[in-house]
Image (cartoon, rainbow, N blue to C red; front, side):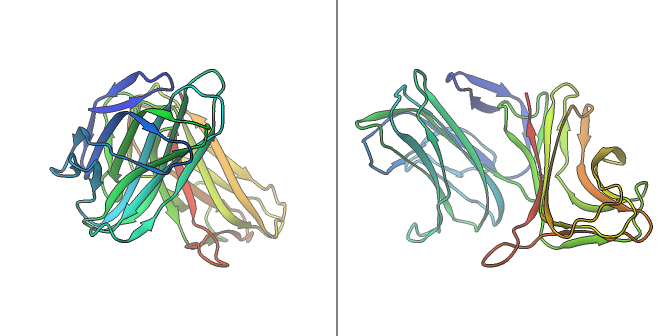
Amino acid sequence: MWRFFTSGGAEKHTAATVTNPAAYSQAVSTVIANNTTTRIAVPTLNWQTVAGMVDTTNGRIIIPSAGKYAVTLYGLWATNATGERVMTMIQRDSTLVTIKQSPSINANAVTGDTTGMSETFIIDALAGDQIEFVAVQNSGGNLTLNFAGLQVVKCDGAVVSYVGVPGSLVGQELGYAEFTGTVSSTTATEAAPLDVVAAPSITFDGSTPVLVEFFCPTMVTGGTASCGISLWEDSTDKGRLYDDSGQSITAGYARFTRRYTPSAGAHVLKVRLWTTASNNLQLQAGAGGVATRLPGFIRVTRAA
């Protein structure tokens, strides 16, 4: 049973079948001193698919097998109009000595209401790595983190098959995939396009809209013939995300979004490119790092 909180603190429930290692644990009401970085133990086991993933003694989640994981932090802060709130995901090695990475999210305080935060990070992890939740605030005094949740789901290979509504939180990431090379063609047609990147298979309920986002750091076209980028659902062309109509772009980034409601059932959403005549459309991405392009990606999130 998946359990998520809304901005008002109430929980929602969505049945799901999880085929990969996954766990969710939480904590309630932690007082955090002003400007004091505090590890938030999340010892309350909500669910896990592999025994021992949730360390209920120390309030961490332990990675059971190597792979790519989606780590999501949830937090709901007490009402206070001053300062900033920061939540950090700490990935340690199995000895707890080495911190492998520590990405953060931050938000300004919401005046007159609680401040809700959530973010998902995609990480590469080894068996035995340990995931922690850390928070800090600068309201000027003690402040209560009313709720903290830590969710870890292995997202390579088979992921999550949802029954009913896919995800319970607007903005919840349902699928994500990257590409790190150059994809180009002078021959792929609109009827038989070339795959750029595909999200994992997701089971939809037929009534919940999603937001499909595509990003590529560099897009190059040339010539006078049309070329474009389209969104596909399985073997069905859902329409053009981009059509240059014979224009020439020497170098620019590409970012397109599409909000729609997929039909009920399991579907693979993917981005594909096509061209006419000899117009060479190129989508260029990389692995990231110093002076290197970042990966391109497709991301599917719940829109309502």
